[in-house]
Length: 212
Image (cartoon, rainbow, N blue to C red):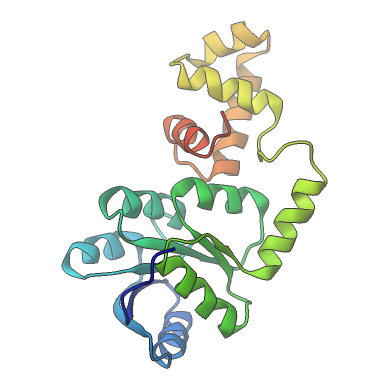
């Protein structure tokens, strides 16, 4: 595991000012952390990155405009040396999988104690995967109660494979012997589960996560 260069340089991307100010105060009090950039939106955060040397982006998952999932994907594509921590109030299984598919290395609840957040930052700076204990416990219980690690059903997976092959709704309906309306419903469910903006992005995320 790589030893991070100190101090760890952090960018905060959070649209709620009080939350962002609180995070800045907590993180700045740690001698090995330095908050070097702050943004209220994903678009603003992405614009800042080329001008700042950032080791770790602490990203709210639910942002106005571009969400944290899509932003994390773009951060990892354009700045592979920068790690992303997904910060959220939600413990939803589909969001956890979507965060991992986006390239984020850590998933931390906003309700977690400060020490857990500090652990997440230090782990992320080395490229290690980190879940706060509550998220890890929730994911473990979900996996133990399911026959599959995927948030997708078998039908979702079959549809996504056909989407990845370039099939349209009518072709998918014909191949699976279901109605076009049902195909559209499944695709809507898939987009929600994978936090994707469109069917192409959903197929890419599912492929990268090893779901198809």
